[in-house]
Length: 232
Image 1: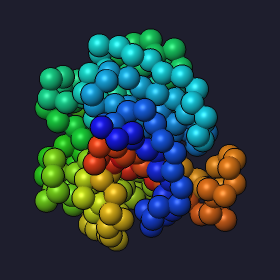
Image 2: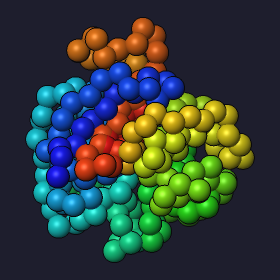
Image 3: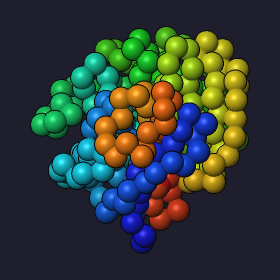
């Protein structure tokens, strides 16, 4: 399999930079604006990077078939394939297990907006209480026509979410009612997505857009993750 990549995107999800990672099937990506956590669907590993320096990795049987990552109040939320219907929370640096909430048979992406943990799951996107897992909001999923009902989800500020698909299609939509605000296709097979403020991006500065918001995507073996960080 070809190596995966973490890909930097601009606010319109256009490619601006990338670096290789040793996973051919990255799936799930999260960032605090400095460190990047990248999950993998096939090797039970979460890897940490610092644009693009490799910081380390952790391998655990509990990380089998990762499909979504999100930072939630200092904890790393991890969603899995249909073999596990929980969302588990870990310390993002020691990877010690903290707690779990109920997920679904296939959460394809996670995004935290400061209040709700959003789950990209089926024909809907669900906002859940990150403490209890209780569903508190349900909106239509604009990526429901894509394979797997979409493969990446990110919160991009305010009441705006972004969903990504494995064929490069993306949708920016309202978390209030699911209405589509913008859409496009960047040609990347995205399998994870996260958002950060471009003004806070560290070196290399050539990856920065002046005053702009950026995305990171990871991809590999024909797969891509999108966030405003994405991997494929």
